[in-house]
Length: 159
Image 1 (tube, rainbow, N blue to C red):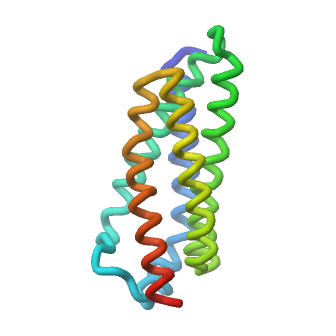
Image 2: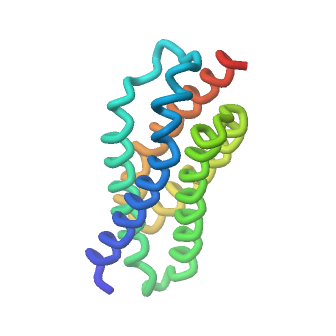
């Protein structure tokens, strides 16, 4: 499989995960979420879809670039990095279920700390294999940092 096919596969995978996550959030965004207290810095709802779409695309490109190195002498490094990538992607989807599906900001907050750590570790591993892949993870890390503060604030305001 060539580099571009690998990138395409992982971009599609990330977008599919994002799509299924959005299905979990959709009902709550229209019913439960408007009824809870949110901080003044809560972004407008329309912003989330384009931001997450861009982040999923960047994640997929980063993952594809690293996956492309699977036949290099760093095969074991690549396999470990891709394992972290898969785990953080699963945790990304789990957060939506915990926060919007279960309507549990505290559980989602605990989980997002773990997600942040896995994103950081993936970023670090990717950057050692392919610098561009590491750079592509920076906006995701920053967004989830912001999301962590937002999640914590929502939990605090609604306890």
